[in-house]
Image (tube, rainbow, N blue to C red; front, side, top):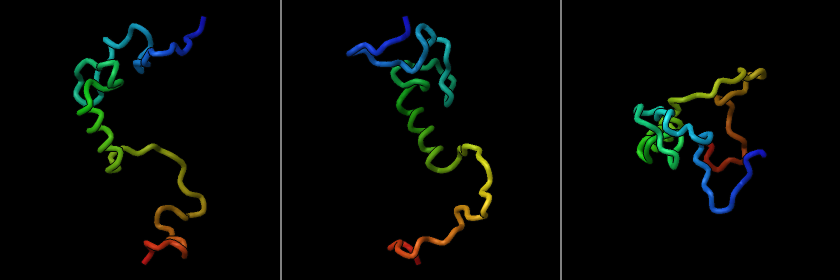
Length: 81
């Protein structure tokens, strides 16, 4: 029988019975299922901050047409210079 959603049961983010073997990617402490894959809210927030600052980048293909983030803003953009 496949894993099915059970009303009232919170997904831990880990496969059954493996939470104790995972370590927090921020500090290396044992991960807590409720903060998966981290050990605490603090480590979750540190990771989020790093994503938002651009410290982490998901690799992708280069823009083929050359219009990357340096492209001019649309004419109807009120924040454009």
